[in-house]
Every structure is written in structure tokens, then in C-alpha cells.
Length: 558
Ligand code: ADP
Image (cartoon, rainbow, N blue to C red; front, side, top):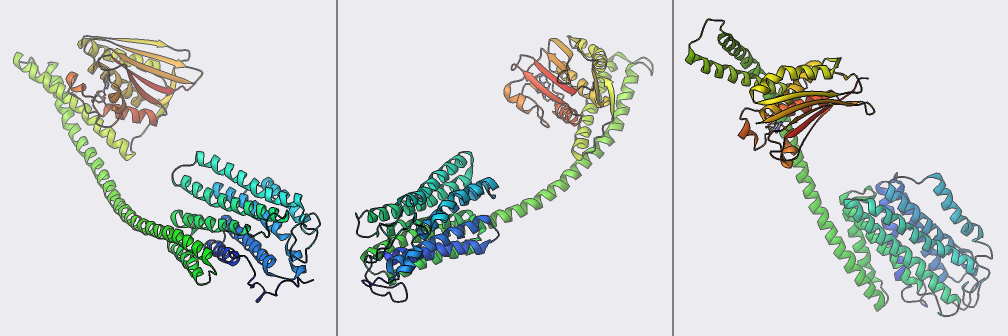
């Protein structure tokens, strides 16, 4: 069955009596689609995303191939056989596009149910392709099947294109809302690329062939414009490849792809048959050329930046190793120095106390005050050394904890009894209260817990000029916690101070006005030790001059 009214094409496809845009819209777009599809596939063929892009471009190429056959060939049997494949390829492109976007967004394959759904969507197109539902006849005079196409079939596969657009749009928008940074940009580029392709492809082919079928247009040459959507899609894919290393493509090969695209589009000048094609070639060439240059430039800049970052990272690593070594040496130094200071200091302090207690006989009156100063200063120095030693133990990971069960309430009460004299000497009252539902047993290191509570009560005595210090032990048996509140009427803390006091060497501005002796290490040590034992320390204050409340919390060992 041959259409005798038309000339036999040379080399299967080539004939002169055709719309001007035919070859221009079919050949380069197909080559571009295949070029990007194959490039992506061979770059990392194990990636599902890459395989799907290749499938889309292969289906597109299949479509353009049968379209060329339909336009140029005069063998009726062949045209009648290939005509239904328009629907098949179009449906495959739509479904593969949805699949492709799922994989692009989630970076993994879709589930079994979704695959079944995809198959279900394709089934009617595949089943009815070569039946009357799809194409029921052939017009030998016009050498085509317009007017014999089943409308329901056509609407169904075109509908799949619009369904894909909506579905993909919804997926992209939902993901865009949650995404951050560069992935957002990738979603936008992908969205513009694939949606403009699906829209122009489905819309133009449907409108063109439908209107031709109705006899409104003499031929379906309008569909030729729809094919340019593929070039747009592939340009956006190239931007994704070059800028974001999408599809796992390397930088240099991606630049090669851009160059190839520009050459390809440019080479069309040589066979662009008429002015419209030349104009379109020029526009596409300028757009691709400019985008290409910009992309390659950004890639070059990125390579330079990456090299710089690598160099800096290497430097940083060396510096870090050196710093670590120095830090270790520092800790060792502090530890040794502190140990060596501690022994002579203990002797100074001990002898000063003995002298003051009269163990070496009565002291001349004028020697008592200087001796008291010696005793106090050496005591403060012992505390400071203890703080330094604790920090160096914490930082070198050498702090040892001996766990046992003990009654926290009893311990806190003893500490209060011991420190009450100190408070009274400073004109303060120290009140102890407990409000417990449990027995108040905790599992922790007794010595360290005592040290922490002592430290916080000491601080309250140090930073309170007048008023009182209340120590309250309370529990929460539901949450299995026990809290020790140390509430004073002292200098208080403002919001900025509250943020920093638990850091090393941090002292509030107002601390020196009350008590110059301090290392700024006590709270840091207390916090680190409490946290190491599973507890926490918190500070609260209504502001400068409004008193403070420190709370130590431990899990109850019920
Ligand atoms: P030090 O008391 O040796 O300076 P700490 O680490 O024990 O170091 O305390 C850090 C800072 O926290 C103190 O310098 C002081 O500014 C503030 N601070 C601690 N306890 C109190 C308190 N009870 N009232 C007000 N400020 C306090």
C-alpha cells in the first residue's frame, strides 16, 4: 500500500515537499536529547536517575523517528504500524518523567505500589495501541491517519502528559518548601526544565493533531514547535550537571558537554534550509552560548575555590595537630606546675595555721594580722590550684569518678552546717530546708558531689553582701529527679552574664566589685563534673542586684 501522490523520499527520510521546520525541529533536538541522555548514562550508568533520563530521551527519539516517518514516508503499511506508537511513546515519556522526578527528589527508587500504579497508567495505552481504539484507518490520498484516531485514546495519553505536569509540579513544590540552600535551586531548575518540556510536547502535539484531525489546519506542522521543549529541558539538565554536579558528572566532562551542545547548535547553520530556521538557530545558539560561557566560568571559579579550600583544609589540619600537641603540653605543664605548687603551699598554709593556733607559743600582737593574711592568701591559692588541676584533668579525660549510692539530702545538710560559720562571719544567714517525697538517694561520686555543692554555696557567700542564703533540697518522684537550689540575695546576674558564666575563665563585670578572688573556673568545673555524673547545673537571676538561684539536678536512685 503506497501513497502514489507523494514522491518516494531519498534515504528513507529526505524529501522536499515538507514544512520548513521539519528537519530543524526533529534532527537537532533528537541529537541534543540523545547526547545529554547518553552522556549522563555513561558518566554513571549504575545510577537510576541517569538511566531514567536516558529512557526519556530514547522515548523522545523514538517519537521523533516515527514522526519523521509519518511526515516523509509513502509506505502506508509502515505509517499505519507506527502511527499508534505516538501515543505509546508519549505515555512512556509522561510516566518516566514522574518516576524520574521521584528519584531526583528522594535520591532513591520508588516503592512497589508506585511502580504498579505507573504500570496501571500505561496498560490501557499499551493494550489498545494496535486496535481500532487507537487508529482505525488510513487515508491513502493524504498518506496519514488523521481523522481515524480514537479520540478517547488520544485524550487518555495526552491527559497522562498533563497529569504528569500536575503530579511533578506538586512533588517539586512540596519538596521545595522543605529543602534548603542549593537543593532549592536545583529543584527550580529541574522544575522549569521538565515542566516546559512536558507542556510544550503534550500541548502542541495534541492541539496540532487534534485540530488537523478536525480539518482546521491543513497539516499538523504546529507540533514541530512543541519539540523545542526538549532542547529547553536538556539545557536545564546541562546547567544542573555543570553547576551542581547532578547525575554525578565530573566537571571537565560537563564542560565538554556544553561545548558539544554549542557546536551542535552552531553547526545547524550549515543545513538550516530557510530564514526561520536560521533565526531559531541563532537564538538557540546565543542562549546556549551565553549560558555555556557563564557555566564554564562558574565551574572554573569553583575549581579554583575548591583548590583553595583544599589547601586551607590541609593547613588547618596541620595547625590543628600542632594545637592539639600544644594543648596536651599545656595541660601537662599546668598539671605539673600545680602539683609542685600545691605541696609547698600546703606547708605554708599548715604552718600559718599552727602559728595562729598558738602551737609555737604566744605570738606578738603585731604578727597576728600578717599571719592571718598569709593563711588566707595561701588558702585561696590552694583553691585556685585545685581549680586548674580539675580543668586539666577534665580536659585530658583523666578525671576519675568513684560511684556509690548516698543520701544527697544528708550530705547537703552537713555541708550547710560546715559553711554556716563562714556565712555568719560575712554577716549572712545560711538556711537549710528539705522537701522530699523520696529518701533522696543518688548514685554518684560522693567527694565530687560534695565539692560541687560546696563550690556553689561558697560562690553565694562570696557574691552576697547582705541578706541570706537558702539551700533547699527537693525532689520530683515522677520524673525521678532531685534538685538542690542555692538561693541568695547577692549581686545577681544580667542576661548576658547568665549566658557565659559556665564557660572557662568567665567572670561577670560586677564580680570584681564584690570579690576579687576568683579564677572563673569553679562553675565550669562544677558543670562538667555534674554532667559527667548524669546531672545538670542551671543558673537563674532576675538581673543585677536581684540575687541568684543555682540549681543542681541529679537523677534519683530509687
Ligand atoms: P569565680 O567565682 O572564681 O570567679 P566561678 O566559675 O565560680 O568563678 O563563677 C563564675 C562567675 O559567675 C563569677 O565570677 C561571678 O561573676 C558569677 N557568679 C557565680 N556565682 C554567683 C552568685 N551566687 N551570684 C552572682 N554571680 C555569681
